[in-house]
Length: 205
Image (cartoon, rainbow, N blue to C red; front, top):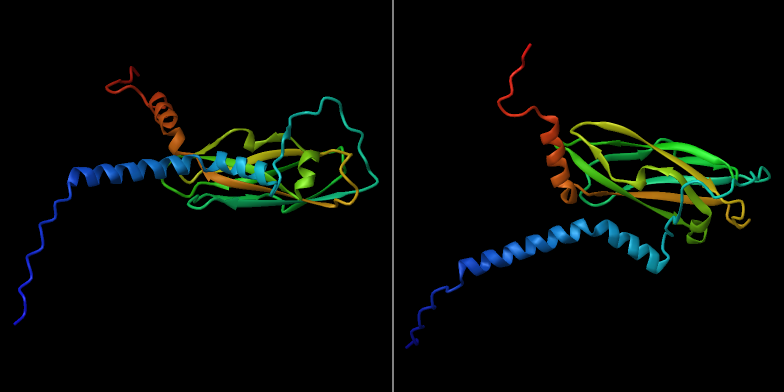
């Protein structure tokens, strides 16, 4: 004769505790997403993979242009996971004399129905070349904001130090685009409020 099984005890899990755990997971995911761009910076700096461009702005003294050689600069655009923007270089590559300023642009388009903020993080390969590539003017110096379905041309002016080792003939400059909207929501909301007329205001015309 089969032994009767005792009834299962009722599920005593606390719904409030479960809700708190889910909230904690959501907060951690938000924080991790917001920190992706800074973490990417640190990762590149510690590992030396895809060296970071650390030289920015105009050089203290103008370089003498070395017209005896040309350096090929490949331009790459990468979207971080979950970043919906269309993002690409205007030109896939440049031929640059060391010491000469080269001007180009990246193109961005926000295909969503909401305003978004993006941040571009540069990296260079080979890593040895990072110390010789100088960004004189770059869209990556600050976050970029685009409204729904808006397009933008983002300028880039770069220069290669004439002291670049002779064996480096090709440099790859890559920009990874991160969604920074979450950390800028308060600023975006304030800007929208400032651009809208006060509630109840009437035209005197």
